[in-house]
Image (cartoon, rainbow over all chains, first blue to last red; front, side):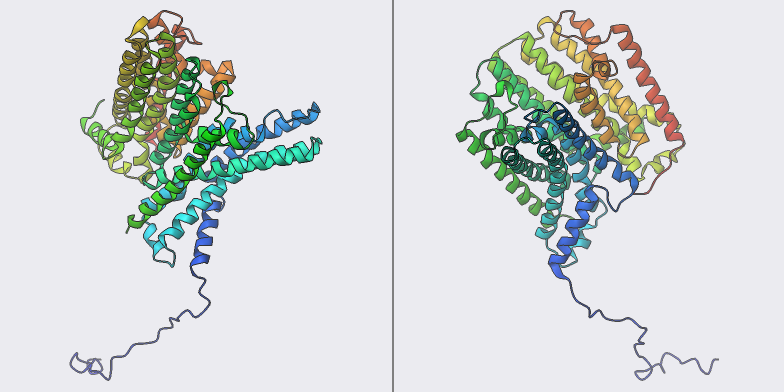
Length: 303
Length: 239
């Protein structure tokens, strides 16, 4: 034994060598940045409805989705049964009525999408892959906006199908349906942006939820209170300008100015075309600002 | 029953770093709105009652209650650091009781004080409106804190359920289904406010005796059950 054991002095250059223990290099196809971004997008979109996650995390999004669609189905059933010529609620109005559900969905899923990556410090792992900051932000933004679009467009689809089945006039219904889709697309982008920006600043999930819901409902509560007071004071000119300060009234203003919707503002005083242009500019500006803020946030975060 | 160290830790968890700023933003908004309303309309009892009832009591108090109530224990259970607290020789009900006191104090400071200031700005406490709504905010702070603290110990999604109760049940169902109003912390506290203000400006769906009994029952039961729940807490992993 002692004879075979080489002394450190004897273990010279001739004896040391690197053993090949079977690690192999990867020479398959590299899928690249676009593929990584697409995967992140589809994973986040599935995650927003709890698909591919535990049963517990499917409950809330699916429940909210059902709550969103059931009233539409009931309305269609009533309209078909009574042979009405018009749906009881217009396509553009539906999202405004169901805003509490939409806000809850954003509040529960936006932190789900980004806060956990921050808290468990997985963000640096993403950026060690070929994707860039902008890819991560774009994938998450697009995923949440798509999830919201699914949530808000599904009931419209139910209503549209019901309207066509009860022969309500194809051209008219299609036009209104298209207007409704444009409005919920804007709403999805705006809400997703606001939700993600707030969530990206809070690693704690619970706190993110409360902050998102606070921003969405408190601003709406404040704006509608002020509008009601302006209405009772007969200063109706001020109502559209007050509406600029909360996300849901912004969408309401855009669609009542350009997309043929009737305004939910007190007294039905919607913005004129000129004011509507301001609404559109502010909505687009807010979406762009959210995207910019997210990019700035992820330049530094977790690195 | 009250442990100063636990209280200090909870205060720091609730108000530390930038969280106090977010909690402070809501009351600030209420005061800004009342200044704007006063400037627009002048002192008017009906308007003051609308703003305080519609915005302060219906929206602001529940949201601050959710943040303070679930925030007092939820994050600790969420990230598992509650085991260090539970492994100390303290009774679990003592921990809950201390956290409840802290949550109540935070909710009261951030909701009742601004309500009083807003009421004074809006109509200078005409017809006792400011005081009535302040008392309602104080009373509902206690019940909300107990309720949401219980939710924080029961569920990982406490914030969502708390908000569903506060916004969907009280605001939406309450306005559609009259029966739902009987089971609402907001209405119970309004009953107390109605007693304070006397006039017809502050009204409630529930009588004062019922409201008081229900408020006390909910607070006591929620605190007791939260203590029981914490005794047999199992820490789940991240989903």
